[in-house]
Length: 322
DNA sequence: AATCCCGGCAACCGCGGATAC
DNA sequence: GGTATCCGCGGTTGCCGGGAT
Image 1 (cartoon, rainbow, N blue to C red):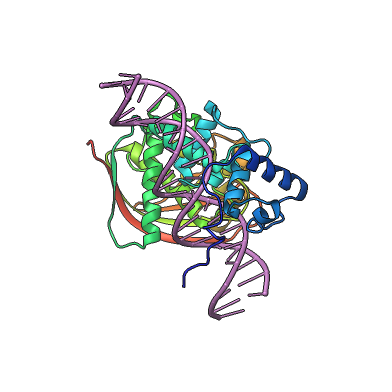
Image 2 (image 1 turned 90 degrees about the vertical axis):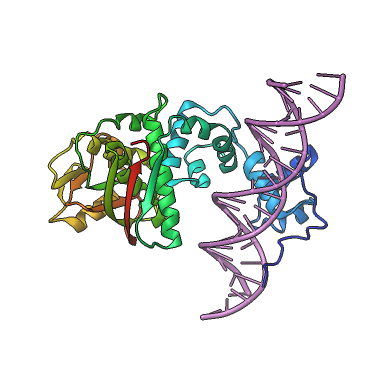
């Protein structure tokens, strides 16, 4: 059975909003609020519009403190970083940019920023070597995009600061345990994408071809924002072969031994991501035996922790130019 | 000057998830 | 637990204006 339409399409007006409609909607919401029901709102306000249309108009144009156009370099950087981390989650990206709407950012990305971003992009291919679910394939595509985007940034003059560190890695093979702040509030897939992209990023920057089996454990406590810088810091540090010993990592001032304190490490990584903001360059990783790569992600420290998903890939990635 | 093409952007559509009943 | 409804999101469409021919 199909879903009932939210309004009578024959009797609602479509197309661009007139100034009169704008002021009617604005006045109504200022006086009465949205009432928590967008479907009923146009009727109450005396508008011949669909509730969804009213909602969109209000959120994107009429509500206070909306900014349009003139994206700053900082905003560009944030958008690029977040896109590389979580993909086209425009609402999450918009949440990091006060006054910007998801639609605005989406349009800006599609029309301008993407081209800027893709300049200098190296062609890479990821080969999935065994059957994976559709969801996993989707994530894999996201990882590819994230890795590609990050690679492009690393070679661009306008590269995000965090990514400018990513060059000439010292080791022949990276197989590490990353811990960084991930995407809070969004669920497991963000954590997966974040951290796997970090791994792929290291690999892509490292050389022409690698084969890994990746086990991605995702921790997410449903907290606040997305902190790609932490991932970059972790990736940057590992790319330069810095940090403490290979058996341990620093997190929030504590030295964590991964072999002995694995569970604690996971909890910490999920709950202390924000501390990496203060310890920007402190990479958090541990070397494990190839071909197993264990990746953990977390959020920005808000709320509790729960393990939300775990899955495996067997994939290789190669630089098509080599 | 007229036409075509293209980029930018506002708005719509359809889907998935959340919630109410 | 099942169904209906609403909300929010991301993808897509289509209009409009400006530049090129």
